Length: 200
Image (cartoon, rainbow, N blue to C red; front, side, top):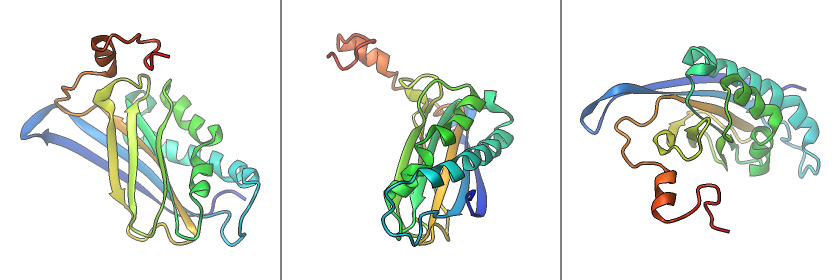
């Protein structure tokens, strides 16, 4: 069965002033959220999660991607991206992970925005109104620190004990007035090879 969706939410925030200084280009951050019935609720420990992943993840990825693209004005506008899930208290963190850590979910988004980077993520367990944090990174360059961002919000009545909150996040722009360089600058200063940053 496809995911049983109780409701969806769209969160859009725009930062016009940061640090008391007007942003030359305002930062827009978008979160598309679905509150679903946990497909493994009431089954006890389930060894094989694949059937429900295959049933639920593709539709969720498609739905949330469309919500982000509609709010952003197209995939080409999205610069930073990420994903998150919170499972309710009766579920396992593995249930939240199962729905977002599959290409059947993430590839809808990755392909729609033309991304090369992996999707930054969080997966947690919590009650209704638990903090939902969606970490973002540049869709094409994981070392571009200007787009290290976090969308933070809560859904007042979710997740219920047998629900999962699933979300995609996006940014149009990076942090206003970003001025901490990027990881490549650090690697150069530390004498590390950019192609072998761990020096192994």
